[in-house]
Image (tube, rainbow, N blue to C red):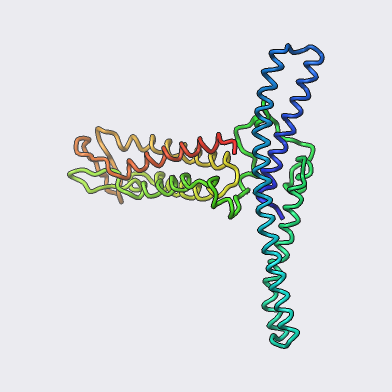
Length: 308
């Protein structure tokens, strides 16, 4: 069984080990006289700052794991007690064996899941190195992720495993779970279905009428926002929203040839509608589209650059 916290805890421990290795190397350079005191002091300040951030992240993760462990232990005790009651009812003759088996089956399954969770949370709490978590995440114990100067990942692309690492139910009720990304995707879908332009001569036209790609972007935006908002790592949530926003901007620029101020030319069911620029009025859908992209970019950047 794979905990949603295992990858995040492993990643934090790998960063900590990387920075500690840098500190060791820097100390060795200082001892050999390869760096001057000012260089050493400046570098150590950066490393100490990174270690403090990583330590805070580890403390928060372990606190969340401890809460989940306590919740599972309480439920496990309740399930065992419920199973014991069924056993007593069977022994006194209140339940037939078939009735007991039918009622006990889901309890046995739940107990098995809870026992695995408790065992796993215990292993996560006890882990002090990334190598101890490698069997739980499927990563190589001897292949730490490449780090930058202060221990941050050098690659701008999140790890593949992070796209399947979801938040727990508990985290969805905390400030860590932000709804802005989800809302921006829904707003994007609504905007492409709403009216974009109208004129005195022609009826109002929606974004999806102007370009099928606008409808596709709306669908992708809603799906990506829902999926991305459920992912555990802020950087991955931000990455997905920035990708969708980028696609939305590209499609908008492509549709700009259709929405020129001089003329608006739209193909509806074989009818080629041409609206003079002076008669064109931009409607709410167009502005909602711009707002949704702005919200998605803001959310994406704030999550991608988040250290939480």
